[in-house]
Length: 253
Figure 1 (spheres, rainbow, N blue to C red):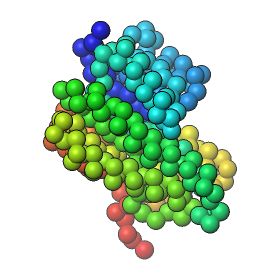
Figure 2 (cartoon, rainbow, N blue to C red):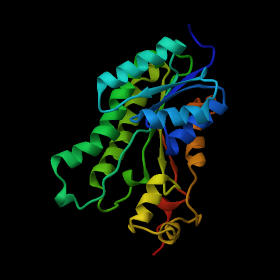
Figure 3 (cartoon, rainbow, N blue to C red):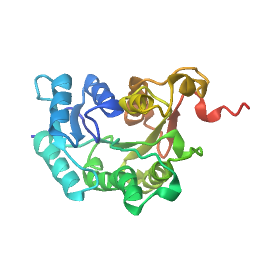
Figure 4 (cartoon, rainbow, N blue to C red):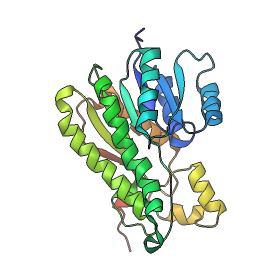
């Protein structure tokens, strides 16, 4: 049975920016598909998001697997009858000197960020073009546009996501699908907390690099993602919205 409400699939959304984005869409009337790798994390996210369970669905999906994504989308269509928005958020991270990267180190990052976004977009496409307002928003990063050492595969993947965004925006415009990206800067998250716990950075060091002198909030990234998917951005496509507190435009020395 087809749902009256629009439906969003957010990959990697059991926690972090992905879950904040799920909350934003849910609060604005969307049916939400939570997708992640852990059944336990998915169940916990769904419990927080939708206690009734009638406006959400949990999907265990590895975005490196075309079969996983296809099965997940099929479950969405079976429950809600439609898919209107895809948010490509799934990601992982590796920090290390480029000369030490093995092929598997490289593939571990690119297969999730870039290949995952490509596969999910391609699989979602036939459903999005049926929507009256189909949209894709992919999560990039400020490292797509600045040189940040020790993050080669991550940076290249994020730059690739922005290139994919521009290409699909032109290619699928005639189908009425808008495609954009959000590039977060330094944001309060479990990932940044882990880096601090491991002594790889400090809050003061991060804040000093941000003109607004604070870390971003996950809710602020979610708001940007939601905006680009919403009717408020109906004439915006092929763009990357940088949400970084001014980090990438500060060239003071």
